[in-house]
Length: 355
Image (cartoon, rainbow, N blue to C red; front, side, top):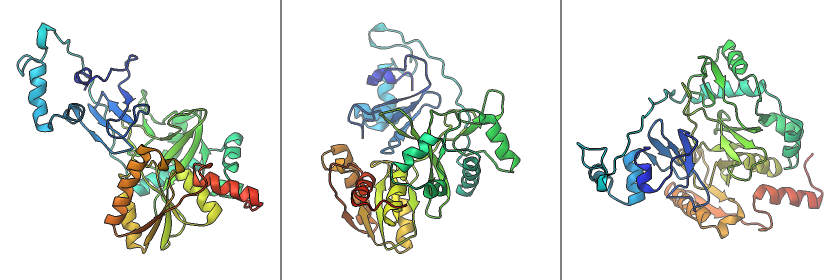
C-alpha cells in the first residue's frame, strides 16, 4: 500500500503513522476525510459508503483502470515483474519495509458484546458536564440513566478489563479491547467524551459510539481497537429505540434517535451516517418481517441543499422501495437542522418540556 500511494497522489503520513484518513473518492467532497488507509494490513475502508478493499482496488478506483488490468499496469510502471524496484526514467524506488500485520480478533457474537458493554458501562460514571449536555437536549435524568450514557474513562484501562474478566466475561472480539505491550487485556484510551450505547432491535448493545468533546469535525466516532494486538474493528451498526410498530422514523445518529423517542414516543431506527447504509438492509428486513410497513425519513434539513446527503438519501429510498416499504419524508423549520433540536425547542416554546 505504501508503494502505490505516491502513484495516485496520496501522500504518506509525515509522522510515520500506520493508519490514517484521506478524502474518500466516492463520497467525500474534498474537505472531509473518511477513507481509512491501514498500512499495516494493506487495506482501506470508508465507514460511510462502504468502499473497501486492497491495493489493486484502491489503484483501480483512482485511475479508473479495470481491476483485472491493475497488476499488469503496476508491473509496467515499476519496470516489470522481474525489476519491481525500477521506475521509468531510471529512478530507483527504495523498497519500504512492511511490518507484519497485527493479529486481530474476529468480531464476537452480539450476546457476548452486549454482556461486556453492559458490565463496562455499569462500572463507569457520567461526568456532570456530560449530564448537563444531555439534559440540554431534552433528556431527563431518568432517561439518561436508563439509556446508559457514560463518560469515557481517563485511567484504569487494564483494571477495567480485569474486572470484566473476573466476572467471567470474554473480551476476544469485542471492539475497544486489545492486548497492550505487557500482554494484558486493556480498554482503549479515547479522547474525553460521552459513550453512547448502540442497540439492535432486541435492545442488545452492538457497539459504542463516542461523542467527543471540543471537536468540530468527526464529533461522533466508534469505539474500536482495530490495528492493535488482538483488537477488533467495529462496524457501522444501526440503532433501534422503542417498540416495533407499523410506522417508524428513520433518522441519522443514535443519540438523536434517543432524544426524538423521548420527546415523541415514536419508535426510531438510526443509521450512523446518511451514507453508512451497510447494516441498514438487514435491520430493515427484520423490521419488515415484524410488521413495519411505513418509514418516515427524518434526516437533517441540510439534505435539501447538500448533494452528499442527497446522494445517500437517494440510495436509501431505493432500498426502501426494494424492500417493499411505503415511505414519507419529514421536513420542519430549517432554522433547526436536526429533528431533535426542532422538537426540543418547540417543547420549550410551548412550555411542554417533559419532566
